[in-house]
Image 1: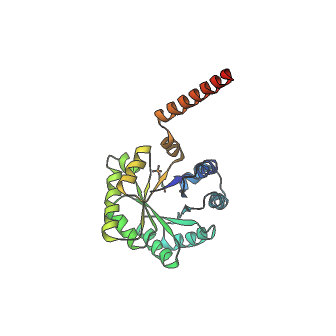
Image 2 (image 1 turned 90 degrees about the vertical axis):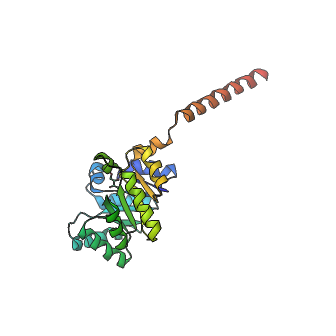
Image 3 (image 1 turned 120 degrees about the horizontal axis):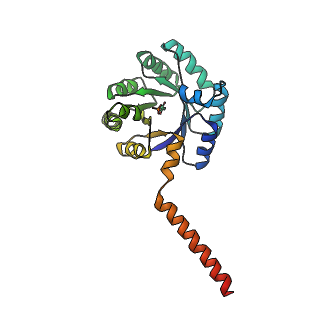
Length: 221
Ligand code: E4P
């Protein structure tokens, strides 16, 4: 399963890129607004320089025509820009246009297997199924990922299943176990994935023993 970072914060993206484990970036209007820069085009272009993998940039128009105009423009910003399209009737129409034009898409705000089937039939490159937001309302977001993956495998459609709205490291493991192709992860969760108390303890113990050894060598000499 590939790991994307779910942020529009350039410092976070820079640090994530240096970690060497990230294959893409997903943004959305909320994340771009948090980043604070109104010059979205420059931000996305810079992200494309920092991360060679896919960079998702979301349409905000409500009708297919508007989304297509926006998406065509976004696709000019970098070779690795994927146009993020909200899952609506209009969004699916726009996805079909993008597919036919060879523009790669990330259909977002997917919350059910039926929605995923529709997105797949419009040729979506990625289908972003939101885990955390489903959990938030008392249902099982991972279960929906499992359903989508099983339908994808059974019917052999080409779309990649992307686990989005990840809230904690366990969601990442569960998405991988469910067979998601990609998980897009907030930077904070990405850092949490590294942490294990026994690793910290082990590193400290090895360092202390190494220093003792150096001390004893110095004494013998
Ligand atoms: C990513 O593509 C989604 O926009 C994002 O994961 C949504 O996450 P949230 O539910 O934490 O806002």
